[in-house]
Amino acid sequence: MRKLNVIGLHNLFLNEHGFRFNLAKMAFTKNFSEGQQVVLVDFVKYPDESYLEYRIGTRINAVEELIQKFIPAISDHFERSITLLLKPSDISETIPERFAVTNEEEIHQAIKKIEEFFLNYGFDWLDQMSYPEVLEDYFARSKEQIFQSNHSVYNSFRGAVLAKLYNPEDYPVLKQVYLEQIQTNTMTPFSIASFLQLLDYLEKMEINISS
Image (tube, rainbow, N blue to C red):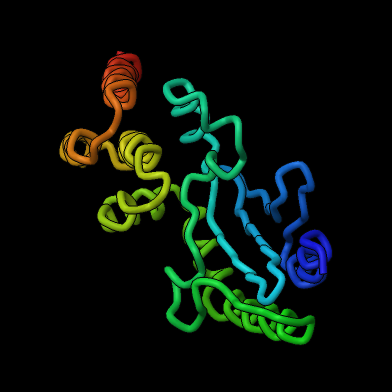
């Protein structure tokens, strides 16, 4: 079974919950006032065994549009411009990191399990993370997980912007935490310089708001 055919098997269920498949982005998306909820389905086929994987998350437009000024590369790929993107297994232990499947019956069984995950956990989690204040709090409380992800450098930028926009009271402390992570996680000099430029921009934004 081809990847698009497997993705298509999710259409009815996700459509019923307000998601629409965007072929250009290869993602199911659902708009809300501050951005989008996102469901990514990936199917990797091998001769003996194939893998069905999922990632879900939210994109906050104000955050992504701001950090693109400092790391333009994230705008080249939709996946990179999702503010928080996790595997279902990061949210609930009831679901594996990926499903190993060898035939169509096992594909349908895996899809049934992921639908149960969405009904029991996933949709509620997406709704919670659609509130920028809740998302900011998640970044602040889950720093170790955030920094260990594949997009750790982007997440440092996001954490700082989220704190500035939605938790200004704690921003002075949190910006230092994100700066230390940038400096200690063997980031490139370009990434460190870009982050410092971002912090400078955020400080000036504070001046503009207060004037």
